[in-house]
Image (cartoon, rainbow, N blue to C red; front, top):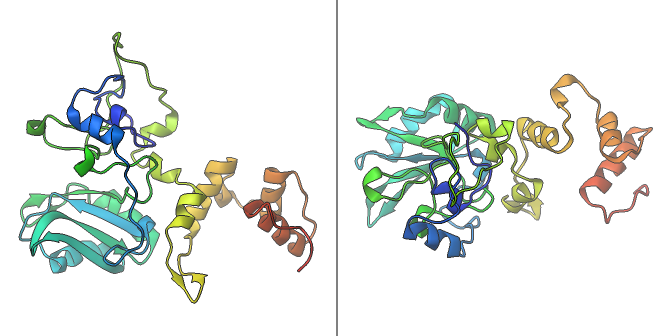
Length: 266
């Protein structure tokens, strides 16, 4: 089994990720869709990296039921049960106070039973996954067999490893990281993370967790910060510049984040 690192409608419509020709109209719609990820509008959670998607809910399930089921993983900041004219649409978004709690819920709540229904949980993808197209536009993941529009590449329906490649197929490049169902999230870029934060008094209210910083730096540099490497050594590895003091280290780091900045003392 392997998983998608970014969303490609044609690939998602293939059980092993090899298709080069769309086999249903939904894939064509997704390929032609001009989807714009939602911003932090009213009703959305404030931090997509702390938000868990919960699907296949029983129509009778309420916000209170969800809180009782998920607060064991950590403090919950906000629950948004999506409704249509007052009736539940069968899915919700749960924002945790800490990203680690969201990760814990992701690992341990999959296929949990709530109100006699086996639920599906996943990280929010609309604001974080590269190339994402939602189900209503022909994309998404999962689906029911009766629909004839199954989508593969996520934890619900991972890709199968290709065995035979026909004339209308091509062998995908399957990297070791594709073995992990959250490989796409591990590789979310700094730019995506900066796009989705709330501002308060003209300052970012969104703060990276230590785990997310380490994951991002490990992806960019190959360095594991949990192995006690110093910040000065990290900057030297990235830039070749040896910062001799704390102040010069901070200026060098600022320059890495914003190349337009100068390296003079402020």
